[in-house]
Image (cartoon, rainbow, N blue to C red; front, side, top):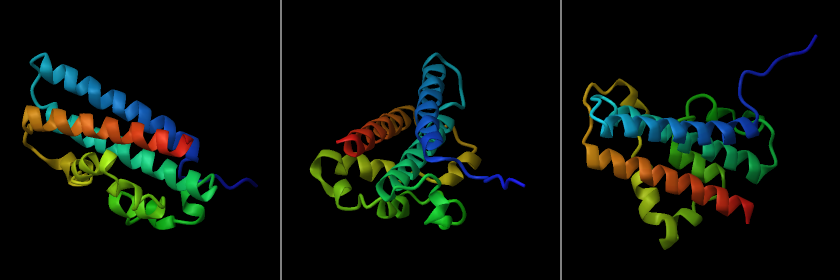
Length: 146
């Protein structure tokens, strides 16, 4: 009998990060075209993209296929904690580098509870946040591939 795992393989985190960024950017486009209540959703989904990219980085840095092989807390209680994920990916020192520190400081303000926020969010603030998330994900890709 084969036991199926519930969590994603590391390559699925990579794919999910890219797709969630596209989703966030799509919502931003709708919002810019006059659709209301898309700003906060775009921010929330952009944060999910960062979370997925960080989980990919954890797997990559530790040679894991499944993140919970070594860090089950990243699937459970600490799964949405971006700072904790960065620590487990051994990137704490890297996010302090001037090249990415300002972007990281924006990105780490993400809150999973934004999914419940009834407000629309501020357009310019949300645009900056989604752009910061995209920049951060691209930086992790470059950092890991080097």
